[in-house]
Image: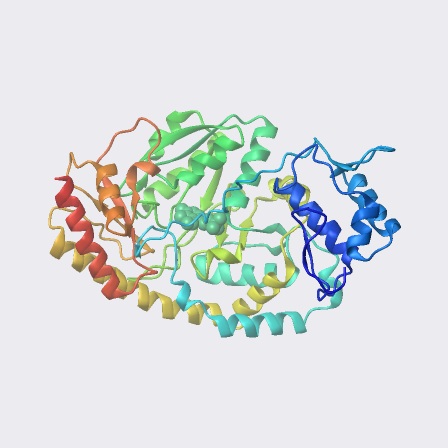
Length: 467
Ligand SMILES: Cc1ncc(COP(=O)(O)O)c(C=O)c1O
């Protein structure tokens, strides 16, 4: 084809002699793409091998080979004595929708759950990656133990015993890709084992309910008050498994009272029950040391699940479970079937971060930052939204703002969103059919203090508009 570049053989396919790929390969890839996206329609005839070969300066055999390859892959149909045609089996689409981002962009994104990602300890993490990897034998990359690398299980057990008051045994630990995978493995095993019902907090983190329902479990909601979950309601529920956030209830912020902790463990002992402890937000407390994990009280009744999501970043997808001895092998098997075990390099880095004390240093730094942002949020609410009630628990990454009774919560969320403020409604975390006081969850950890002020001023406008 000389040095001409552009469409060939009347096809919507371009070749370029300057392209390092051979012409027949460009032709093949071009036809494949055109069939896939509908520029070449099903049934459409392709130029003869002789004509196209002459145009491209290639032998007829090379074009035939390209057509034969595309026919073998199912893109073309070849018939003796007839032109090659585009296969009917492939339905291309001309108007393929552009891939949409899952994230909605808000100028002020106060949706709860995110730590300050700008504060992620990048350099320490890079150092930990290099150090963790340097110290590991090459075999670490090959023989994956579905429970996680031993270095991480040892470092986590020491850390959790010290920071969370657990009674952790590295042999009974299972590293997973976050709390969500941990809960999902447990729920699916429960269903398989014949359990049909699970209790969760109401209001409670809505993925607790979603994950359990997805596994085929019936979900019973347990009321929550300022002392945490209502244990009497659990006793009456008929459930033998419960998911809880005892250190800092999501979304209310209540800490499970000592008397209820004792009664819960008693319930588990007498009902042959299992408590799934979502140890969420635990070290992120700004007034005193966090209350110790329930698991320390009853390691054979409490399945403790933790995550690096709030401590560092959700994108690491790193979590862990301290599993009662009788449940470890079913869960290890489930994890192995699901994904053979979690990614290894991140585990080695996290092990290094834990054992060098870098995680403690990071958390100390972040606690100061979050405490300051929380106070800023409370002041802004007091100033702009005097009718709104806030919690009095200095912990976590969000505050629950209770709106005056009768306020139209979805309308407030929509009016705030129109002003560029992203929030989450309390109703999202309530079980179906339970009406309650309207409220919004405002995350403050990932937002700078001036932006917090502005966002709350805009929220006040939204509340006023809804009336
Ligand atoms: C109550 C609660 N539990 C657990 C998690 C963490 O889930 P994961 O570790 O899967 O990111 C979150 C994150 O937002 C949460 O809000």
